[in-house]
Every structure is written in structure tokens, then in C-alpha cells.
Image (cartoon, rainbow, N blue to C red):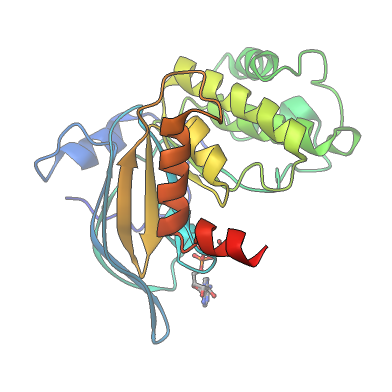
Length: 269
Ligand SMILES: Nc1ncnc2c1ncn2[C@@H]1O[C@H](COP(=O)(O)OP(=O)(O)OP(=O)(O)O)[C@@H](O)[C@H]1O
């Protein structure tokens, strides 16, 4: 299995063959987009990821939950190859053709919306692809706007367009909707689900929001003490709405795994 140590990719229009080859070169799970085996990451003396195993299949949407400080972002940053200064061990294979979306849209304020979307993109049809991506996220006609003229939700739509215009094999999202109001967040859930069904990237979504995880993901994994402590498929029919007994059971199970005791909390209320 190839262990990657390179810098962030996904800001360039790279082909997918290299990443796919890296995955196919070793190991037995040839179908996986992401394969992590016995991953160890430490900051100084502190071991944050401690023998973590995780596989993500092509097109699979995995939500990652975990208490604050459990290492969710550390795992995501390892996959994105954003950290160079941490002790590491284990195996990590991910495609080079990946995109990352953060809580803040991270748009360049001195570039117009379309220029942000196609930044670093090469090829003859970059602009057309950028315009198509903007239309897909509902921002048709806003291509010449400046980022400061957009709402937080609109900026996050641009960020999604910027990611998906590169047609990534892997989309890494670190609490992408954490700063948005509840209504905008629901709209973004619908949008992200639609985009993922159309483009079929493998997705790793870091979130604190158990409902967001259940509504969006094919699988929800919980990070605890440096490892995946729970790995649950979400087998609910679409559209997933609160209220069904299956939804409630999965929600309770995930909350319990995260250390939230609903009975105790109700008793204290
Ligand atoms: N660059 C760093 N240097 C030292 N310690 C770090 C660094 N980055 C993260 N840590 C520590 O590693 C632990 C895990 O951090 P991480 O951000 O991955 O957690 P998280 O699960 O994403 O947390 P949250 O849900 O609060 O965002 C934390 O205790 C954090 O302080």
C-alpha cells in the first residue's frame, strides 16, 4: 500500500490515474477509494490517532462523529496531506484527486466568484466548467460577484462548486455547514446530497451534528480514543426525516456512543 506524504492536492486539475494506481498497488481491497490501516498520529507525546482503521468505497458517503478533541480534523488533515510535522505510522491510501471543504469557505476576496471556482484549474473548458458548477449550486448569474457580496451560505455554495468542478474521487468536508443557520443548513444538506448523487465522489464528512450525519451518510463512524469505536450503516429510506422509530433508534445509539445519556439528561431537566 502506498503511504502518501505529499502536499495538498485537489487545487489542481489532476488526473485520477495516479491515485487509483496507488490504491491498486497494494492491499487486498482493490475497490476502496480510501484505505487507512493502523494509522498513528501524535502531537509531541500525545497520541491522537492510535491504530485507526477505516475504508471508504468509491461513491460512499461516510460521516465521522466524535467528541471535541477526539481527532476528527487530524484524520481529515492526514487524508488531505495537510500536516507534515506530526509523527506518523501505519498505512494511508487516498486518491490524489481530492477536494477539501472547510467550515469557512476560504474564498480569495480579491477574486470574483468564477475566478475562485476555477482557480488553478487547467484545460480548455475551465470557464465553462466553472459556470456549470455555479449553476449546479444555484448561483447562476453570480459569477462576477465578489465574495464579500455573498451570504455565508452562498459562499459555502461557491466552495462546493470549487470542489466539485474538479470532479474529485474523494471529497473531504470538515464541518462545512457548522457556521450556517439551521434553515440554510437544511438547504445545504439537500444540495450536497444531490451533488453527491450526481458526481459520486467518496465523501468523508466531519460533523458534530448527529442528525446531519444520519440524513446525509451511507455509514456513520465514531472516533474514540484514537480509533473507530462504532461503524454503523444508515439503512433508512430517502428522504430521511426525524420521527421514524428506526431514525430515533440510530440517533439514540450514536448519542450514547458519544457519551450523551438521554435518560439521565431528561432526569436532570
Ligand atoms: N497542530 C497541532 N499541534 C498540537 N496539538 C494539536 C494540533 N492539532 C490538533 N492538536 C490536538 O489534537 C487533538 C485532536 O484535535 P482535532 O482538531 O483533530 O480534534 P477534533 O475531533 O476535530 O475536535 P473538534 O471537534 O473540537 O474540532 C486536540 O487535543 C488538539 O488540541
